[in-house]
Length: 577
Image 1 (spheres, rainbow, N blue to C red):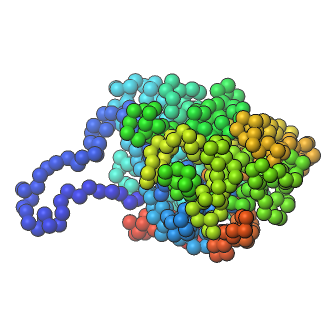
Image 2 (cartoon, rainbow, N blue to C red; image 1 turned 90 degrees about the vertical axis):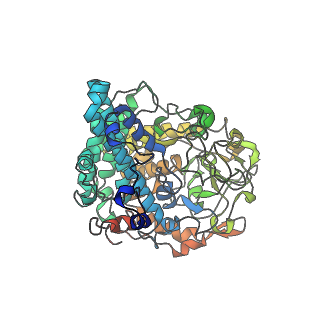
Image 3 (cartoon, helix red, strand yellow; image 1 turned 180 degrees about the horizontal axis):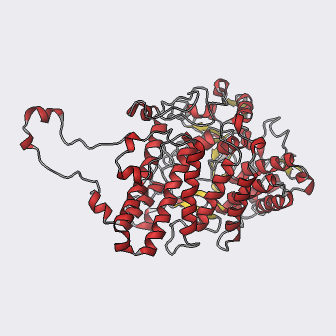
C-alpha cells in the first residue's frame, strides 16, 4: 500500500546541523493518534467525509470505468491524449500505468483507513463518550462505509489486500498481500460487513446523510446479484453459472426496500436528475453534495467527480467529457412502442427538434442525451447546437445531461473548473427494483418481473409533458405484453434493455455486461460499428479501429503499477496483464 509521509528534515539539513539542532514540531494537518482515539464521533464523521472526497482523476462514481469502458459512451475532451482515460475506452492499450488507477486505489484505501481509525476510536473510548447503544450504531455505519469502499475496490481491481482495524492496529499494512484472501472470500467479507450494518442500523436515521438499514439491504442485494453469476471472468461467468440460492437472497433484500414506505418511483423521470429533487423517494443511498449557499462555505461540498462533464460552451468550465455513443442513442429506438432489439443498430438515426419522422424513441433519450437542436436540460434559452461539441471529428455532437443541473441554476464553482451540487446516486429505487426483476427472471417468476419492468416503462411514458413536451411527437413507448416474458431468453433481453435505457450514463453499463458474461461479444461488436459513426456528414469515433476487448484478461482492471512496486513482491497482478 503506497503511503504518504511527511519529511521531517532534508538531506542538506542532516549534513549541516547536529541532531540537537532539530526543532521538535508536531506535523500540521495530522490528527494525533491519541486524540483521535478519544474522539470517536469526530472520527466517524471523518470517515463519512471521504464519501464525496473525490476528483475527476479518481471519481468514486467510477464513470470512466462503467461508462467510458462500455458501449454507452465516448471519452470526450480535446482529444485522445486528454487525461489518461483513453485506454479504458479502447481496452487494447490498457496497462497498469495510468496514474488514474493509482489515484483511485490510493484514495479508496484512504477511505478504508479512516474507517479503520474510526472503529479503533469507537473501541477505545466509544462507550465512555457515546454510550453502548450509540457505539453499536456507529460501528454499523462505519462498517457499511468500509464495505462501500471495498465494494468499489473489488469491482475494479478484483484481488485487493484486506486492511481492517486489526491490520491497522498491528501496523501490518505493508505486510498484507492481495492474495491473502480469494475473490470469493473478499466478496464474502464485504457481504459480512453489510450484513452487520443491516442487522444494527435503523430503518430511518434521525440525521440526514447517515446510512440506514434500507441502504444496507440494497448493497446486500447487489453483492449477491454479482456473485450469483460467477467469478467475473467470462469463461466462468454468465447465465450458465447462475446460483439460484444467491438470487433468492436478492429477492429477500430487495423485498426490504420494496416494503419501505419511504422509497418509491419518482413520478417524472426528469425530476430524478434535478438538484432540488436529489433526496426524493427515488434516492435510497446517495453521496451528498451541496452549494455554498446551502452550507455557508466558500465553495460548498461540490461534486468534483463530474467536473469535466459539462458541455462545451454552455458552462464556464465545460470540458465536454462523457459523450453518449451513437449505439446508446440507437438503443432508444422503438417500433410500436417497444425496443428494436435485433435491428436497433442497423442504421444510424437521431431525432431533430421539430422534425418528426416515422422513427420513434423512448422518452428517456431526451432526458439522458443532449443533442443539437434540442434544449439543454429542458431550457429552450440554452438550446444545443453543433458548436457545443469541443472535438466533433473525434467524439461527435452528443452530450450527457443527467449529472448536471439546468444551466439557469448556475454553478457551485466555475472558471477554469466547474462543479455542481448534484448528488451522486449509489442506489436509486428503480435500480434496486431492476435488480429484483433480474433475480425474479432467473427464478422463473416471469410475471412479477414483467410487472416491475412495466411499472418503470409506465413512469417513462408519463415523463413527457412536464419537461420534454417539445419531443412529444417523437416519443412512443408501450408496455411489454405477456408474450415477451413467455421464455427466459426474451425476458432477459427485456431486462437488459431496460437497465440500459433507465440507467444510461449512470456508470453501471460495463459492470452489467461483465456480470452477464457478455462484455467481449457486446464491446467488440460495438467497436466495429462505432468506428463508422456519422452525424450530419461529420465522421467521428474512428479511433475505435484500434479497440479490442480480450476476455480472460480485461474483465477486471490491472493492479496499479505504483502499488505493485512500492513493496516489491507483496502484490500479485491480475491475470494476463
